[in-house]
Length: 222
Length: 250
Image 1 (cartoon, rainbow over the protein chains, first blue to last red):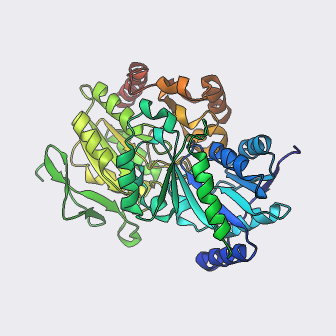
Image 2: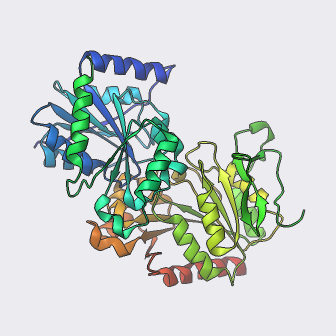
Image 3: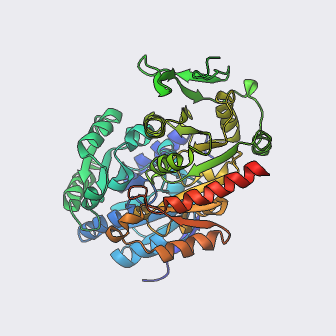
């Protein structure tokens, strides 16, 4: 695998961020390109989850990954090595989130035609929820060690998401984490959220999540 | 002022959720405060002014930051219970929503606790900490602890006027966080590696974590704790005790 490319993003100058995001989404629909915006706290397992999903999807679909971070290119290098699909590292120059123009800059930085692109957002449960990236789907990961109360404390993130992935379920015995409580809290914020339980490390539950994504991908742009 | 009910300032509004105001202090009702941007009415205060004023009043302000779910609240409960006989302590809990943390601190330690809601903001500013300090200024405290919003990015950009910044990095998050979130580790005076009892469960290399922390900030003090197993708490308390005593005696 060749060196991973890193690009430094510029903040959007659009008057309406919302319009810009909606335009991008329409364009993606026409191109039949499904972009999944993945958000979570730092260290919830976004990268590991993506690697598992990409490895299940890459034979059927053309997949690429955009990794956003404030600094370092650890994640982009890791996904390139562990999946073999094209990846690009986006640096936000200190910013705590991505917007639709940044997504566009990332898309332009990736060469080739793809069916699915994963966009790994900055690890942060607050700011990324405030900015529409123009993605087709918002996926939030909540890991067991963070605790069941997070949907109460970070309302917008759980209101904006289409699906919630509970990760690191293999560690549940070590933490005070109650799945029933967390499910109620998630539904309190968002009655329509789909919830999946996985252990990205062990590959548990990833196939169900992948199958759900495939059904959404197949419906996209139809 | 009846002591238990803090004064309500014009620009700090009480938050009443579902017609309930919340029981936090001495079993008297204390509201949740929502701090809003209201520039015309704001008490202008820079972080340095706050630090200077608190120094004169002999109050040590500790700002605690980390990712969501790294164990800030649990660690604070352990520390406060070990320090509260020596120092008069208050806690300012900041969240976007909810009151679980303030309730937990109060239930487990009994010290004065107030809950601040930032109105959606991802960090505290010196204006907000100044407002929050005003709510409890009728009493003297040796140590006031601010629990910032769970976020490794934005809180690092805003000096809230604290004398020290304590950053938690929990084992399940992984040892690479100082590389990805540089500023947070640069502004830290001490870094606490938390949940060390779970090291065998995760791929966490503590030497790698320390190396990454020191790469960002060679002067930082590093502690290893497990609040759940009470490991490392005594050492961290000894450090804080020395810090606060030196500050109060200066």
